[in-house]
Length: 170
Image 1: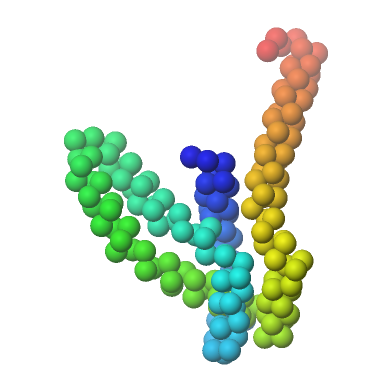
Image 2: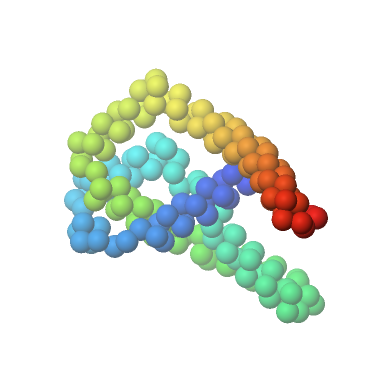
């Protein structure tokens, strides 16, 4: 699996977690206008926001398949066939997630704010941000991973030093 795939999978998981953790408040319960929903969908299209969620349905299916394979490895062929059918059958459900995400935009931003956002993303700077963002995310994730490894080494050294002071050898 490529780094970009891992980043997308992590982003999908993070985004799904954020959506799941978003409390339903009275403002989210209101129904936005058709115009607001149209603008929100345009933002999703411009940003390519739904691509991070494309791995969710196949990921859930593969996780379930792996669980069932652990129970009975002899079912590999049949489980693969069912998984293929489920991916096709469940793919349209991504549209219901899209509608929910568009509604989140539409109730949190005014129509003018969404128009301004669209204008920004269509501007040269907005286009540059959109085109550079995947590279930025990849490099940021790599930098964060390197940083965490160094921090882990430092923390382990500190634990060992403190334990040695207390008479423990680690």
